[in-house]
Amino acid sequence: MSSLKLSPSRLDLEIFRGDDLSLTVNFADDAGAPVDVSANTYSAIIANITTGVTVVTASAAVNISAVTISVGHVALASLPERSAWRLVEDADGSVTTILAGTLAIADEVQ
View 1 (spheres, rainbow, N blue to C red):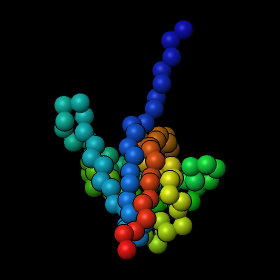
View 2: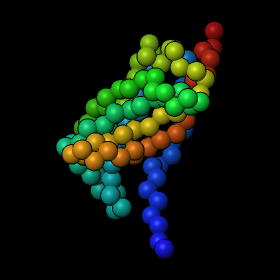
View 3: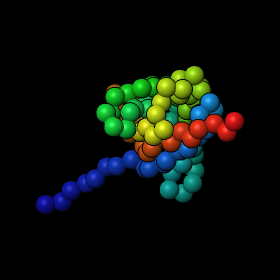
């Protein structure tokens, strides 16, 4: 019996507590040519790594072949040192996790 595993790419992030989070993801085909994803919607979900409860949900801005996630420091303030995050694509009702990983927040340098 054959099986197919569809798993997202992994990207672990680390920021300093008090900073804003901004991440741009560029979409390209196997030849490196940009892929138009402007018809899709994207969101970033940050969850408690222990309980799985969503703490922050943020929409992402789409610019033809790039998606930018922006989450301000106020929204990130209540997160623990380690959370789980993922970038979700909704393409005409077909929902897919594109990227996923951990989000580590280091204490500010005083």
